[in-house]
Image (tube, rainbow, N blue to C red):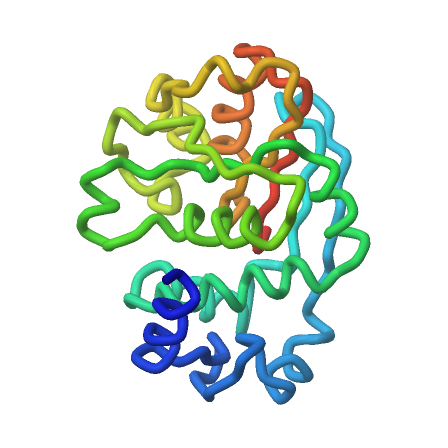
Length: 215
């Protein structure tokens, strides 16, 4: 039944390259892959004075990729999540690191914003990564209880205050001693990732890796 449903959906919503929209079974055409190849960094940062232990990101948040991510988030192009997941998984070193973790969870957005947008962009990518990596489970570990202003509209000090006490843990019982990937689409100052990681660590997560598309 699932296979038949997937086939029917593929006819209605055919697989496309998320960047140019051309039909492509791998969600990334060779022309677009060539265009972005020199922009992919796959940077792995060890961090200090943060609640998370590592940060991995694909690209700098500028130019063409900035346009792609903004289109994905704000212009109803949810289908692009498969292309972004494809980019993450195509790097063997990053895949190997991710594959050593137990759980992947997204940074949550408030239900009002999710209803307005129609989807949580980080949730879609995190679910696709869990679907493609056998050892990882997808879980919603956090909820956002306050609909705060967008971080991008605030000063550095305002960003720190804006994320305080706005997230709560759920599924507490499955966090104990687990290695967790926290997925967020864009890493700017790291305040959101750090606050979410603090909550995970205080609930006995063994390790937290922050994974993002861009920094």
